[in-house]
Length: 318
Image (cartoon, rainbow, N blue to C red):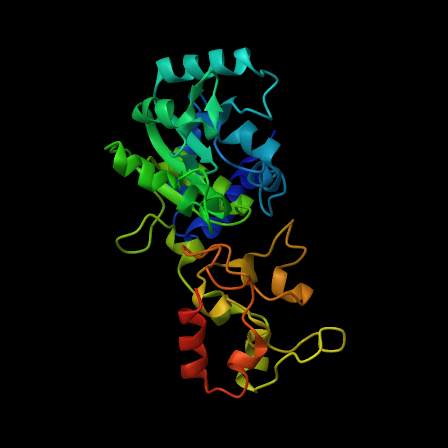
């Protein structure tokens, strides 16, 4: 059992995790005390997805998912993590729906043409998802497929894949919504958002006129990148096998147009991040990802260009 001191330290960490400051520590502490007797129900529904976001969710930095569930929420239904599967999963989903007032997390894009590309039970998810959204207190788009359509909506999409937001607009569903892009979603983004909402009853601060949490998506990856000094000194990677610290912009890095806190939050219990593995950012959290152009920009397109022209070139090749 957590001591009072450890409990307050957890609240402080969560305040930093979600808001970037400790100002909300006391608010979160009061909120969590109220949660003890009535934790919010969490319901997960999978549409067109690869299970990557669920896998990512198990490897948080500040919160282990099991520890998170024991203190913050109650996992009522999940199509792969629950013991209940098949008809039992659908029965539990129906019980959660009838009780109402749950947080609905959607992973994957919604196929609309043909809607039969993805089923929930014996009906296309396109036909039934709106019903489950209608009684939710909050809908969360978990990952880029749910947030923007992702890979299923790219190129010659054969399923008419839609984002959750587009689906909600088409079905005129007015429910609070948070968008957490990423391929996969960052576990801190998901658990931090749920914990903040559960403790305060409010959405975390979002970017102006959007549904993206400000703390997670308020600045460009490029501006926080550990290799920004190399960029400032015009030290660019020419050979991946030899250059381990140079800027990756001329290798097609999408960091200059993609907003996320990846460089500072890092991944897998803060073990690493794409750029520090000498891999250019592919911009998986950008609304236009995957881009119509090649995955990475060709170095011949951006070499020897001033920064203003280079940034313009990156934007043109979305």
